[in-house]
Length: 124
Image (tube, rainbow, N blue to C red; front, side, top):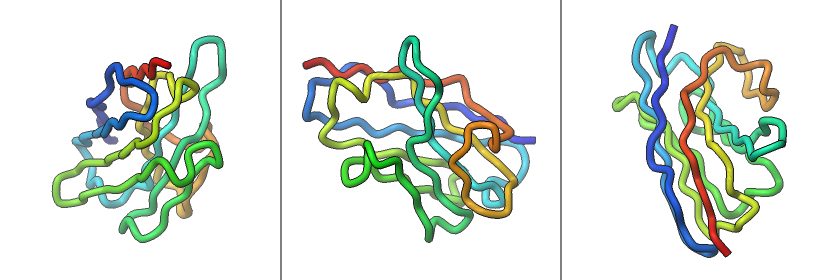
């Protein structure tokens, strides 16, 4: 089992940047495929980005491709999401998640462990 704690959310103007972090504790972090998801008010939780064990393969939703970067530091048990050129439509609660699936997956239901979420608000 792994416990996940996100941080780094906040209020930012459109065009600005934020860096989210997710610290993992418990079972070996490097064995998990990790993902970032987000949920806006009244909407379903959606995939944002995912990364494999080594960090060598990354996947992004079309809506964030070219603006967001997912990365991980296995020595620090930490997952990151660098968010640049933020837009008001990026406003949501952002969650990190972990799965022992053998390949990178984008489905919400494929992830076994979730953090509590961190709020990101982008003003226009």
